[in-house]
Length: 119
Image (cartoon, rainbow, N blue to C red):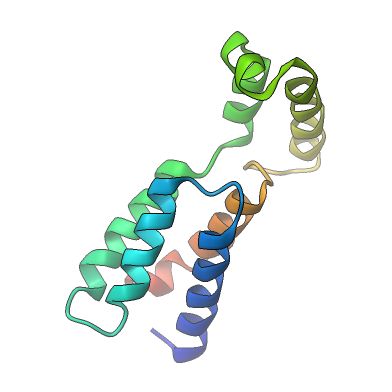
């Protein structure tokens, strides 16, 4: 992988680890990938990292559905859930495919480089 692209992805990965909305599992996968860069495990860890990112990024329709559900209202609180639904519908109308929370935005940016990561 091109050194500049690798450095960019590593920086985004560090940002992801520090993102308040990043799940524990994704933080752990991100750290494992960072630790594997430059080692014999890098290729295998890259595949696992990408799998975790793809599993954890929240498609916008899933976010809307969850925030509208009783479980979502319980999780976020009714007022916050309603605000999330409104916001999610607005960004979906503007073309967003995924949630735009800090973690999902970083994951989306990393996944745009998936081809470079797997090359």
